[in-house]
Image (cartoon, rainbow, N blue to C red):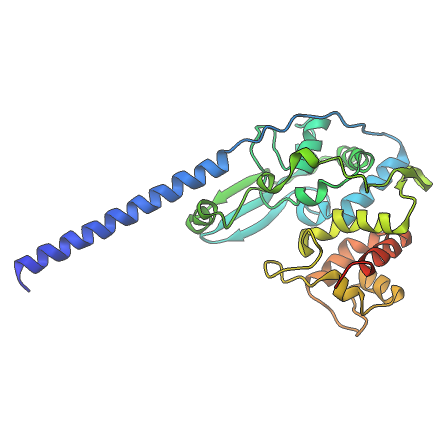
Amino acid sequence: MTSRLVRALAVGAGVVLTLVVLVAAAVYVRSALVLRRTYDVPLVPVAVPADTAALAEGARLAATRGCTGCHGERLEGRVFFEEPGVARLVAPNLTRAVREYSDAELARVIRHGVRRDGTSVFAMPSATFAGLSDADLGRLIAYLRSVPPADGPGYELTIGPLGRFGLATGKFTPVAAGIDHAAVGRDGATPRATGPGGRALPQSPKVLGRYVAHTACVECHGAELRGGPRTRAPSLAAVVARYSVAEFATLLRTGVTSGGREVGLMSDMARRRYVHLTDDEILGLYLYLRSLKP
């Protein structure tokens, strides 16, 4: 090998190394900007009740909307996601976090995905919770504040090289970036009438069903409830078209399909979350989903 060829290879290797360093630096800077971006979402007062019925309903909401699934049965916090090279995310100890946040700050992080410092949360389904009625949000906060303190980890987000590349290229996005903050709390389809136990109920079963669907199901099945490749969740309209209301209720309460099968994540979600839905909610959800085009 001639000295000229050696020099040429050395120069080429140097150029490649320089490009790699520049790309890595650009990815790091871009991902850092995404992580540090703040969102100007004002604090809005929320009425937080203290009566026993409201606390009981708040506990049910925490179960059906997945708070205990992500943060632990005692809301003590746990590792929510960990994949080498991508990220490590700890869902924080809510029994401690609620004592550090005001009611308005809790309302903002739950429905808008915006933390106290104005930055966004990651992975928390705030886009789903954005549709919660003010009354249900108040009950949920009341319950969270009532849970006894427990030992557990605080919030942690560690991003690896692959995760930073995903942030820089837009594959991964902060929760707050995907929410129409101006529209939060303005959904006219949320329940307004009052039912047993002080729970807000709509005048139409389908309205209640829509409310449940858009505050509990869109997390996996998408805003249009048609599923998608990211979560591998099916279209709910297509699923419900094959079910009677009794079979649908069995699926939601036991995780077993009309054919007697287990269906992975859905079966787990049913036994953890949807078993706590009321008869009215299940019927309303069924009727609403049946009204959609498969």
